[in-house]
Length: 253
Length: 231
Image (tube, rainbow over all chains, first blue to last red; front, side):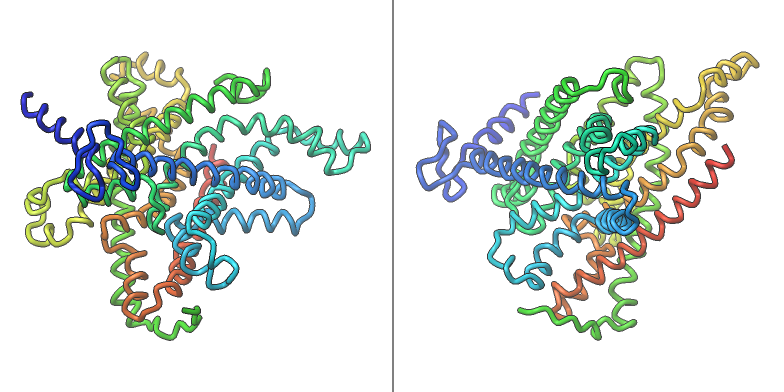
């Protein structure tokens, strides 16, 4: 038991150490122009959350469009939606991100000056859009066919039928599954380290290497992932509760 | 450096010596992790559904903990924590030379068990309670009920989901990138390095993963249709 105390002390000390020299700051906050490992970790956490959040927004917007497309009577659009889903679902995320980083800017020269974090957000967003599209499609398809016909028979256009009849119910049915997608996107954002985003996995490996205190660094990052996942879970539960449709599927949860 | 979409360097001989061993490893990793993962996962699911509080708690912590951290972090943890002596003990010098590969097999088996256990839990719950009661009524023990009545049905009901998860697992094996294990992706990246085509090689890599995963998911879909008819 007594071995633990010096080990903990050393861990605490390394987190307050400067990343550039041997200074240990008693407040854990470095002077201007310098960073402690704790501050670096917080920056890395920020990158993880930023990439995840931006990617989630992209994924929700694109996923909604793709999901709706796959339920349209127009065969061409439906097929495009299917193809999109299969394409992004069947290639590993790390391969997709490497392609966004190494290949896409070569094909679209205007993307060459774009920082890699933007590419990471787009890559992760589109990867996730396929999964969200899948759930949106499933949500629309759980509604009785009669609702669509009723809308059209009332003289609504197809767009109006989706806007006022189908989507308000379908989206609320889908909402619970989006909780797990938000958690997935935080976890998947870790892959962005492969294209040099300084998020938490990057921090864990880099800081572990520099200080030779891998366990401390890994542990700190793991705790922050737990906190992130837990927070998302609670937030999503709140959103879910406030938008729950009484009597609809999923309200039993 | 512009892309030169000339793939003449990707000769059959190059593919055979660099990429095929990677594919073989990725498939081995997937199959071992699936087999071990389903066994551990089923045990964890049984623990989660058991009436013993300690088992329930252990299973919940196991599943929730592994599901809330990224697979990459888990891969790094296992690689860090398993001492080299372990690899030497199971495979001698070969084990030491292939630490990353062995470490990934252990990691994926334990990590995937958390996901398979949730699938098996749903499968077990899909078998109606009355069947278990009927089993008890004819004098079966708990173990007999599970082995002879519940698990075979749970397994069959969940087979398409288990296989879909396995395709996801196959894609996830590419994350051993983090510890440098020689998998399918690494095979492609190595060829890209040798022939100085680090960007171009990613397209055939993506195509290969796509063909494999899409093909397998088509097969799963067909199987699913068949199973639905049986039920």
